Length: 393
Image (tube, one colour):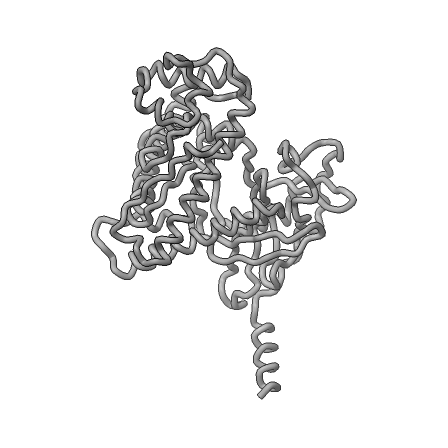
């Protein structure tokens, strides 16, 4: 029996997709002194990032063929699935290799758990086919995960379908503005996706911005990306212990500033999140995509004047915030005086880091609430109350 099993496994391996040959073209070499992509993050440490190599095979299955993007906590790679049968079209996936600090790893694990809950809801909707709920197809679901042992720790990696350019990339390609007819179609899809998150999953997105909404790829586009990397490799920087590759798609290290630009007033002052905060984000994002600029001016630098101008601009458009809203904000005292006027001095760097931390804390609270509700099978038919963060420092 063991002999037959060995023959079966050998036969299957013979019929699986073979690894691709890597490029023999010499890529442009970047100077070692020049920070490249993820190295540009102020928090970057080479010991936190896994030194991925093109051609490397992850988890005995996924062969890295191109770099797709990066962030301050991860790199994203296009990989060929070697478990695909040889006579079928090649299958490509996106592999997100997260940095190894414990907080990054925990956040990535929670993201995968929540993604599985979304997948469960999506499967239930597909099977029951209720009228009027059609947004589940716009949810980007993580399909698998594995742990990758690196020279300085373990990296939590996730697998998903590869996505194309972001709405921000598309906007820049279209000379800074997305045409109205195209934007209407995009907005309709985003609203359906939000309906799925809000009505079916009881989940708040919290991070809607042009950079976080990506287009799907056509069937043959991943192959085109892999082919392009073989024929004309992107520039790379070779170091003693790793190679820093440049991406076929853009990365994003401006999450903090863009998050502030898109965020609802009540969130900034610490009055908590709600489904309405997602709708606010969407409205600001639509204006940004249509007009080519933020309606309340962009936060272009981390200084006191920018934050002061942003808050004042919000008040100029919307009027003075209600006193009860200011009273609910745990951070109101940091930005307003006793009369409700914007303070003249804001320690912006401290506040920005506080906003980002509170956003992460909220997401963790929200994910815990959803996970707990699902475990107790009480998610459907219950209302989700956003966590009050007034107790946070």
